[in-house]
Length: 268
Image (tube, rainbow, N blue to C red; front, side):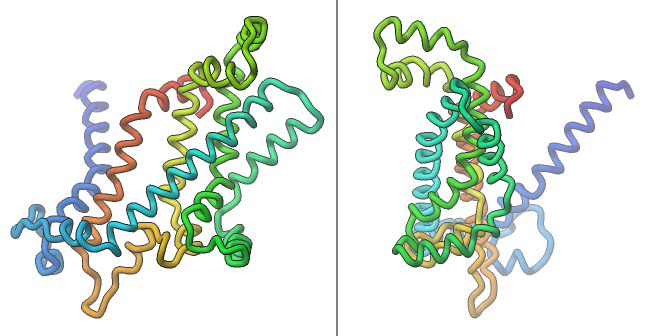
């Protein structure tokens, strides 16, 4: 067997190994609980859409997706609005303690969410933000903004300062220059930052579960509370898992070129 054939076989095996849990999740989502618990079957013997029908017809299930998408979208918007000017300042200006501040900002991303769990809970309970979408979005900003600043600073530093000077000579104000000229030039960096912000906020569970109870409860928290009097509804849980993967796949599809550019520039 030649080297290329062995390499191709290894890549194929690795991809199949990665896809096996996803296939098994999809397979379970079209089965009844009796079939899931009855034995090992590689294909549904009694193909059913009842699990998906329950999710789309039960508000306690589909509102979890609505809540998740709501606070994730808010988080991505806030992250970009805060990180863009901050990254521009770190890239274009020199001030006392700039490197120390940049490192401190990035070090916040290294802390586990559990460290900030109690302070956030007490703060939001005191000011009436508990169980709201904005509460989870702001909590996730503590982790997403530093990473977005770090990513965007690299992209902004790759743009020559002469563009800024020429725009000012042509009579552009800073807001007009920043929106009309500069942002389109770093759209790949914005796509990469938005991708990582979305993925962290979408999969993070500890803060999202603790800071919500009913009105803003995300789908991840709902999936961990599916045990009833009759036990775990494995089919519905599998269907919910499949639907949870889809938004992430769509985001990866739309920003795939930007992420590839970020890796090529060495900032991701």
